[in-house]
Length: 142
Image (cartoon, rainbow, N blue to C red; front, top):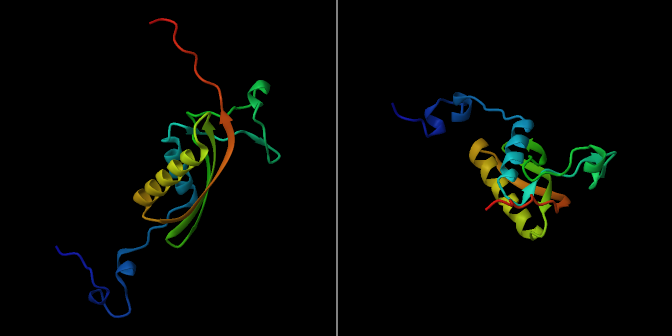
């Protein structure tokens, strides 16, 4: 069986894309892929909890979820045709270089979203809401 590569081979007035069908990818799918891709960078994690639009860096003391480098970032996506714009809110491990971490996250998100969805990522906006200074205690047994 041969693949149809010429739109004129399908028939008059019809393109290959109409013949093969259409694939719709929901914004939420792109958001989940982007959030997981950001999590793959060791120095990046979930964003600081927000109440009424304001971040709460010390929220852990009040029993509210804290920034967590093992949790997924907050993401939103907007798709128009085959192009998407993504916004991420992340925390960064201190003392990591914020511009380097955000560049790594941006590259990873673009690659993952493009590879898995076929969408072209036009922009990845990143907001750093917290620096995570909590480090796990070193083991005393050697």
